[in-house]
Length: 298
Length: 158
Image (cartoon, rainbow over all chains, first blue to last red; front, side, top):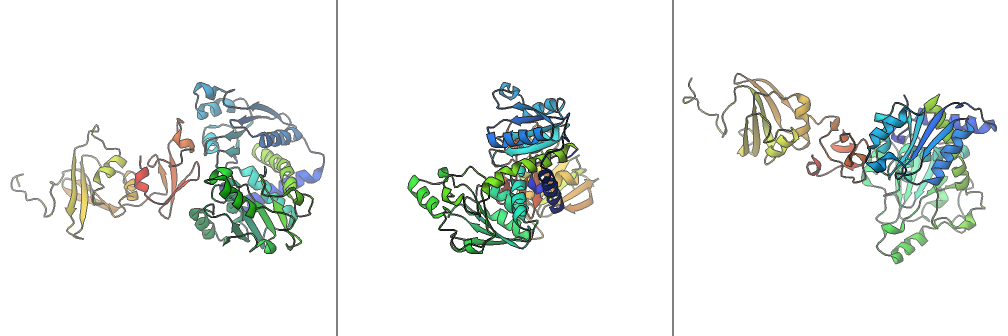
């Protein structure tokens, strides 16, 4: 039985195989109903409209059906049942479980108690592998995943999408440029681990230093609550804002990504520029999630 | 030789045991933590001798010693103590003789030994699981939430 819990569990060839599968699915136009007759539990113990909708959409396009649990209140967890018991029981109703949960490691636990495959749709501040896979997919749609300069911008200390993506990129020949406000730099343990895995990491203190030498710029949200007061937040947020002017001298092939929702990191004026790929990135969540669902159930 | 005639070994404050395990060269002051890690508490049945801050004949530095009668600890059990005392040695005693002497090695996976410091980790809720850490270069990596413990490991020992 095959689960998808963390991007850390993936070797490069497994990531490549999923991306290829997603490309094939997307290129078909009309989808084959490969999961017809399959029933999937979408257990969302934490609100996440977008991820839930895209999994439901992906499943439906492949002909599968979903049973959805939307919150802790609507489930036996509110009566004190453990997640382990819930998973054991739900396993007997369905062919696969897609789980979103506020506790980190919840999906790993679920995979230990489930008798059907589990897909992690985000566990607290932990892993969210479908996001990382769709990030990689979007990069690969635009350029090869080797010999490129990727910039990570924003909260690199707490941002899980940035952590997972940088880990996934360590499977490839990529130069990683980190650009983070003081105090929100990439954690040392992660930076050491990535270097040990052969990733070239170059830390920068400002966006201007490096933006014109990047092939990919991945911006993440800078959260207000990380700052002592709103003035220091505004100062930092302003210096990390991407505008049409910021992009004046960038490489022609630069792509600009963001896991969304954005909170002012990217000026709406950028949306119409050819570099803006973040809405396409969100759209790519469908083929990637279709590939993931097929991967665990077929 | 009667008990009266037997002269204790130089430098040791506690007498030899007939059968069991002697954990020697424990970092000074850590003997009680070692017992806690091994799950040996006041309510277990083993007879114990504990010496703390005794001078090592070998290194002349202070060390702790724990002697556990009538119980031979397995290597897996004992390896857990490598976290706090990497230089400890384990001596299996049968009929007053050391029949086996091994050093300790930090195991690759630690199960149920260390509490994950991340309050959001699923292992810190009432689920029927034990904490599980992978040990890489003396750094512990939580296999559930990916949290890392790189210093003060002893503070997180359950």
